[in-house]
Each structure stands twice: as C-alpha cells, then as structure tokens.
Amino acid sequence: MLKELVIASHNQGKIIEIKNILSPFDVKIYSADELQLPDVKETGSTFAENATLKAETLSSLSGKACLADDSGLCVDALDGRPGIYSARYAPNRNFNIAMSKLIDELQASGSTDWSAHFSCVIALKTPHTPTRIYEGRINGKITPNRRGNNGFGYDPIFIPDGFDKTFAELSPEEKSTVSHRGRALKLFLDSEFNGRNL
Ligand code: IMP
Image 1 (cartoon, helix red, strand yellow):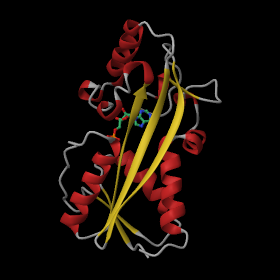
Image 2: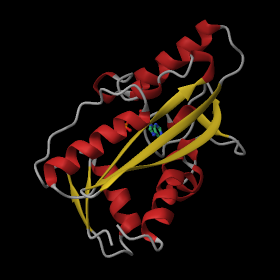
Image 3: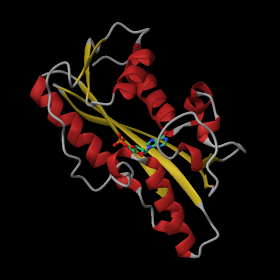
Image 4: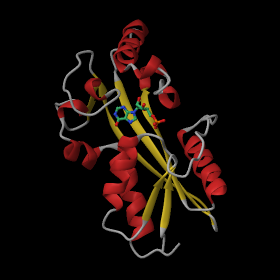
C-alpha cells in the first residue's frame, strides 16, 4: 500500500485539500517544502506533461511516491487559452487583472460563444511504477459579470454547466463535487486506494 506521499506543490491550500481527502487512509503526507524539494519549472506543453514532469522529478529526488497536479481554464473562442498559462496570466497572482484580460480578449474575438472548461491532471509516480495519470474536466461558460466571493483564480467568471451560479458562488463542498480537481481526485482515490496495491 502507499505509505508515504510527497505533494509536488508549494501551495498550502492545495496541500491542505489533499491532506483532508487522504485523512481516512494510513498514508503520511509530505509537502515539497517539508523535504526542501525545489520548485519544478512547468516547461511542458500540456497539463499532463507538466504534472508528469513535477511528479517524476520530485519522486526521483525524494525517493518517495509523489503526486503532482496541473490545472487551468481553457476558453474555446480563444483557442484554449489561457490553458497551461492560467497562473501566468495573473501578474503577481492578481486574478482581477487576469480576468479583465480574458474578458477583453473574448470581447475582441467577436465570438458570442463563451464556452470554456477547467481541466485538472493528476500524475502519480512511485519509485517502482510508471507514472499514472488521472484527468478531471468541467464544462461551462464565461460570464463578463464577476459574482461570488468563494474559491480562487477565475472562479467569479466561470458558470459550470447545470448551474446558474459561478464557481465563486458555490460552497467549497458544492464546487468539489463537480469541479475538475474534485473529479480528478476522485478517479485517483478510486484507483489508488480502493484495493490497488502500490
Ligand atoms: P496550477 O495548477 O497551480 O499550476 O495553477 C493553475 C491555475 O489555473 C491557477 O492559478 C488558476 O489560475 C487556474 N485554476 C485552476 N483551477 C482553478 C479553479 O478551480 N478555479 C479557478 N481557477 C483555477
């Protein structure tokens, strides 16, 4: 069984979320910071490449199993942008600027179809097994009017299909039942913790 797991992230929010989800299981979680592991540059061209790169690098450096994720918002009328550049669209992590930039680009595109989706890819690398990938996705649309105070990033302008609220208007529990990250984590849990030995 998986006894130890390094989370390839320096984002405290993400680490706490994953620790909570894995709390029923007997697995010791380490953050990259706790083991003084470096930040891995996201030089891939897809979410899967970036997640794999992070998981494989930190598993090799730590000698332990490592979980990494990469995620972002893909807008159809913008040919999938910001995609893997979602975090980098926000100077100094200022998502008000990133959201304004996205809305400006959509308005400039002339498209009336503001469909979009969030994707999240989780990669798991253990010292003795090849990397395994789990992907979650949620379709929806962009609204020019920001609504809600929950969540982070682009949540105030994303309305998931089947809802009339933005992600930022949903509670964390409601969001994680449908979100890209919630879905990818569920696939990861079902596969890695329900009867499968590592
Ligand atoms: P990373 O996966 O930490 O590299 O960053 C992904 C970026 O995508 C975040 O900084 C956000 O900009 C965006 N993103 C990913 N998931 C969400 C989400 O659930 N809500 C809002 N923005 C998100």
